[in-house]
Image (tube, rainbow, N blue to C red; front, top):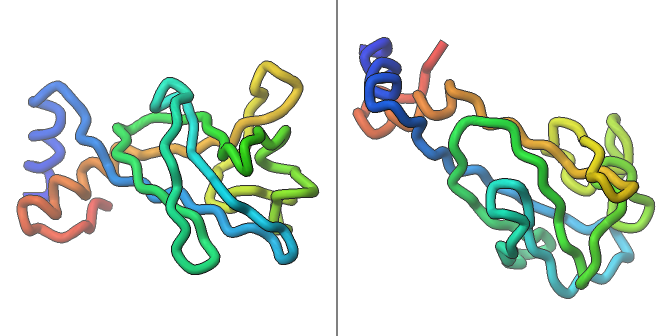
Length: 138
């Protein structure tokens, strides 16, 4: 049955959108009043993030692919989503604004956008869940 759901995705000729959660937790001592998500997937338009506790978040349905994005924080673009001394949080990868980013790419303006990759396996998992088959997609 697992192979059936993969074939359904292929035969329909389109990839299913997968809910992807984006979140931002400011580092201690940084006051944040607004955050929005902007990226290639929404034509760099605004997707406002909501504050829940100390973390800002929004969920966006994305088809499998590789997406560049930035958070727009307090009305300004961070220069570098992977190495930002003001809005970044220290991780083993650097001062990432979004530790869930899979890396960064040149933004064409002297900075870097974060990158998120949505896998085809994630789309198959959506089909499995819809068919009540669980999410094991090996």
